[in-house]
Amino acid sequence: MVKGKISLNENGVEDTVNIHDDVETIKSKKRKAALTWYIFLLPSFLGILLFMVYPIVESFRLSFFRSNGTIETFIGFSNFQLVLTSKTFWNTVWNTFFIGFFQIFLTIPLGFIFASLINSIRRGQNFFKVVYFLPNVTSIVAAAMIFQFVLHPEMGVVNYALDAIGLPTSTWFSDPSTSKWGVILLAVWHWIGFVIIICLANLQAISPEMYEAAKIDGASGLQQWLFITIPNMSGTFAFLLITGWIGSLQRFNEVYVLGGPNGSPARSIQTMGAFIYERGFTGFEFGIASAATYIMFVIILIFTFINLKVSKMQL
Amino acid sequence: MDQKTSERISNSVKFIVLLVCGILLMMPFIWMVSVGFDRTANITMPFPPRLIPETISSFNFGIVFENGRLIQSYINSGIVTTCSVFLQVSASLLAGYAFSKGTFKYKRLLFVLVLCTLMIPMEPRLIPLYTLFNSVGLLNSFWPLILPTVINGMLIFLCKQFFDQLPGTLREAAQIDGAGEFRIFFTVYLPLAGPIAATMVILSFIWSWNDFMWPLVVLNNQDLHTVPLYLASFSLENGTSLGGLTMALATVSILPIVVLYLFLQRYIIQSIALSGVKGE
Image (cartoon, rainbow over all chains, first blue to last red; front, side, top):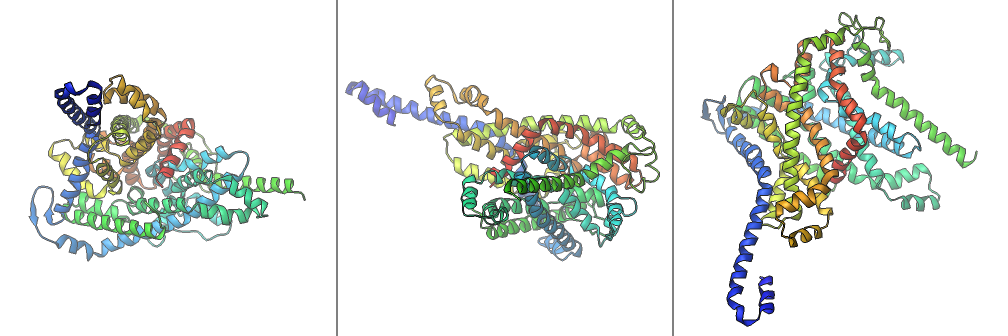
């Protein structure tokens, strides 16, 4: 439209007929340009429709049916009722939250301390970064396989070392009362590198002027850490808390390797994800599994919302 | 004691603490390699644990390679990962660029929709995707592992952030020369996108290589198993009975990734940090 006006001024009064044409071509050009942009988005939005929107809707529909993939009968809310009254399901919820809680509240403080130490030394920063991040690049499946031996009650190194320094040993994965701690140890070992890297990146973003001002006021190293570093890291902690919980609530890979789909011993390490896998793909009860995924989805959404509120994060 | 010496002492203490904890953290790997080279470890694990095996032998590694299934799973993982990375990064570059520089209707709304996909976990999608691929007869092929990776909200987000930092004046100059949107993208902006493309490739590679639950659902055929699937099936079959063999297998499966990581560590660590810092 603006261009049309300019051409009017340039061409004078005689060319009024052309203005209409100009406006027309500009309009069609704009439409064509907009169309081009939609072509840019085409692959992604085909993906969203086919692999996100459709499955979410279909899974919602399925949760009201009894289905094994071929035969379907509508049964209303029965699947939800069955899952919500199932002791096995609530046990998996408990396991998931238990493992997640200790993983997160052990790893974030530990990782932050290590990151602060690495950040404060003069030489070897990069070396330690590489070493501490190494567990995180190995796949959790391979890590679980190694940990089965590392935490073996009779021949594992951890129990040997604990015994050697006079500490009590544990039965780890061989007993339902301790198996969750084995998973927690594995999860901490695997996640700590990620926490350290994220903390380091954000530690280095704190402006050095603050520390200089504090030094002039006579603050000690520890005081600077407590009153400048930690408050400045609250956004990072919130980020780690939220991503940590989202990841923990979907835990599946390592517990599947360690305990199979039913989280043995005695379902002590079966997570919500494993419950869904067991019902869906070993029992082929698609309706029940779909209802369980929706319940899990709602749990994740509510819990993420609470985390956002607690950490007062602005998204 | 003056300030300099006390600083030096605290520096050394910190260094030693980090070193000791680092060795503890590496302990599972060190033990893994040691047991893998132990000839007798398949009958009983060496106890008390020792760093250097009594009889060093490559027996376990020989079996791992002779068996051939690990090599096959490597090839499978390689095919799947290469295709996924290519598809995911291309689609995300196109979409990220459009969301940054494009002018079209519903831009904000569509971008919010992309961000919403970040909150959707895999689990609710498992069964419908399984029946979808089953109905078109593509189960037990690599297609179900590759095609759904086309959409990745995180990569689109990172990519948009990157293009937002590039000036729009570059576009205007090319537009005056009469270049179309695609030409502008491919000749002006894409050549500048090297750093973010590298980050996207690294993240996408890690996600695709380690993907487990979805491949487990769609691949029943052992010949198509990816590396994590093969490891899991081996581990579930043998439990803690074949120590030496399991550890040799774990070593061989981890080694290439570790070597790659050591070569690219700066870029990998940067990429991970970027995904976290920007995620804030």
